[in-house]
Length: 273
Image (cartoon, rainbow, N blue to C red):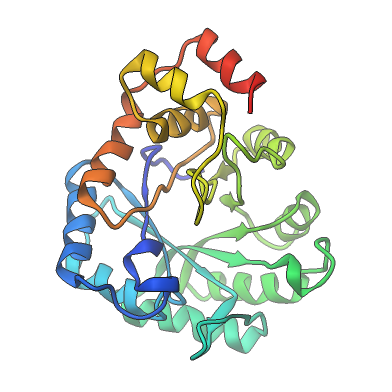
């Protein structure tokens, strides 16, 4: 497991509407990135299919040359089309091209972490991933990638990938209102693999949970801070990447690092939904 601060930053929201095209205010987007680093964020989650290319280019403009301790995590396995669709791109050639696109747009000689993004819409969730993960392992052997991870993966796919090359992280959907991945959270903790929940605050819709407001009021915190603190206390291998395009919301999210939920809070959050 990489030695990182437990709250990072997810850059997806820095693109335009529908995660497509440039943001309305590129200077604000770059200000968010710089403020994140100022406040101790040492890992960013991004992808060259955000935009496409836009978010990686903003990261480079805002932060390059990068701080020595900054880890940039990217995802490959999809491409964007002019109608803003997300299209799977898992052929070995497409994966190689995606790694080179990320390297170029981020201004890096080597990508620190690359997640293979899977999609259950392609077919059975347990589908074989040997061919594409082997292609990534070869890129790692060539020195273009340092660490590999999986996104939207099952336990069986994680096991299959680990038989090919080491896996340092799994990035799946998980939050206080959607705990379907609980067993995989526990398994990755046992195996020393970081678990990075995407949509920790509910994604494109507001997070719905009955007890958040009451617990937040007890602590003088926001519901978002409580939801993030719950994830941090859920398992020691959880790393967070909450995203926002607002400096104020970024600062509020990072305060979750200091929020400690009591046993009473956790019981209430775990027994009501």
